[in-house]
Length: 165
Image (cartoon, rainbow, N blue to C red; front, side):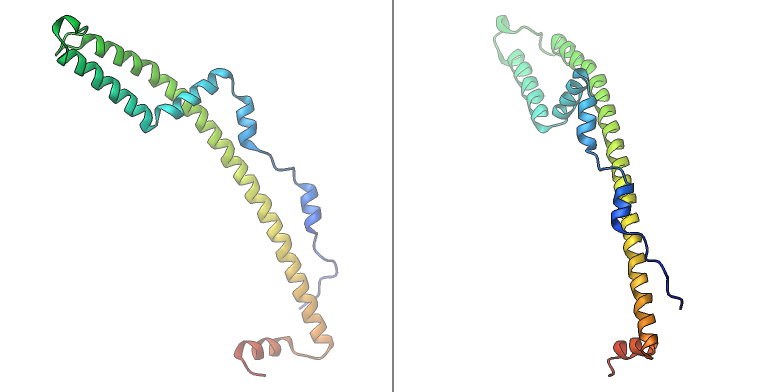
């Protein structure tokens, strides 16, 4: 086995070469317009059980009032519920594109996070490669020292692994 004459590059060299880590969440948040922030806020809230319970409660109250209240106090004719259907459809029509906008923004954010994760993984892989090169270099130095002392490195390894002394 030949002994390398120059040690591998150091971690400090790798760290100097790489760009600093960045906070993707902060970057994306800073680039959002007020309308984008509103769309994300609404998208986050609409997809909750709280919103479902509000809509469910509103529906139960509306339909219950218009079914059970005296005729002169009902404002939406029972069995047709035209006004309730109209308002429900307006809510759906307004929320559907708004949720899609919010999901697009959230998807863009997820892509940026994935890119950042890839960059970090690549940096970590480079650092692991440097560490492995250092370990191989140290291993070759130890083998060379053992050979200069007249000790067979293979024999040392087999004695240790087999439990014999």
